[in-house]
Length: 188
Image (cartoon, rainbow, N blue to C red; front, side, top):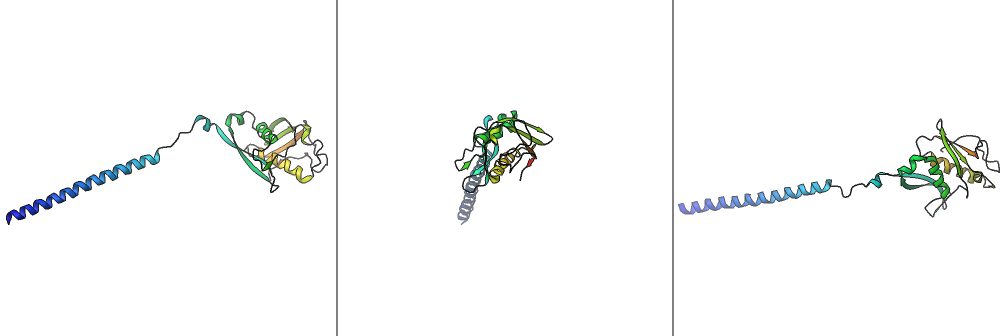
């Protein structure tokens, strides 16, 4: 009987040791898997390239053909382009027109930007006469042209107001006389 008790105690001790050993192995595996998962979560998939660091998004305003309202079109460009002369760049993109086929450009063909400069938070944009030449668009279309220009350049933080010149002259306007450039324009 004494031998049976010893065998029973030894068996119980072996079973407890086996359970503890298996438990220890399982816990270590779970702990290692958790550490691997955590380290995987914080590992970036791809690094940002130099080219991506130099890009920024600009917003241009064009006419939506369906709704007949001004809508923004975002474009990704190299920051270096924007640094040299941001006003010329934005206006030249407006003159070129939208990338989206559902949008229409508003600035008439052959229009050129002669000069641009900022003075006392007013951006002066000097356009060629093609902006207004032989245009009988009506007040609504003329206002859309101005809003397209003003909304685009006022995306830049330093621009609050816009004055439009034609070949260096103030107080010009569209031929029908409905919209004159004798005032500064602000974003609406």
